[in-house]
Length: 216
Image 1 (cartoon, rainbow, N blue to C red):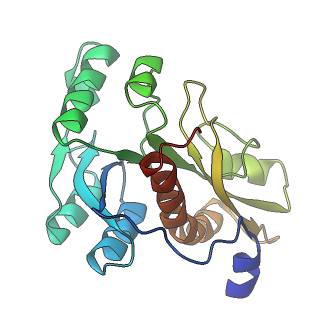
Image 2 (image 1 turned 45 degrees about the horizontal axis):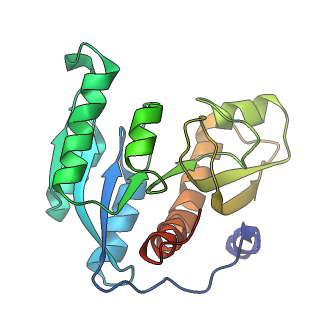
């Protein structure tokens, strides 16, 4: 199965880009943070040339906080429920990102739709990982949508973030088969494994665009 999954990753990338100094990254996450952990591991082992300057979460009980603590990664919880407007909530995040001089923002399980103002503030510096083969199954429940549609394959995509939800230039995609006995739990588990494979390459490719000031 591992070889099958590898063959279904496009484009096939053989290694990570090198960045000197290391690419300054912020991760935005709302959940368990397994993709965040994968980036931390690759960074700590000097496999991926990134420096994770900060983790930002909007949930005080998110599992990613524990992972940040265990890995000595600075983090901040900016709870959207404590702000009267989305504008105020996002401005607080913007302030943190600017203070840390972030080059690339990685949305890894960030369960908040960002505004056009946020996107424009960091134009072509935000990427997202979405659990479908875009442009199929955009929105909040793509894994269940694929099951409901009786799709034979599904996958995940890393893309630059634009004002339209789940849009933007694609960096890398991966595909997996949906087995007849798959359910939401089993397919989600397989999806996470595939996300862990492709997200680091998406980060590396985005960093190449940013550092070389290439048009997106």
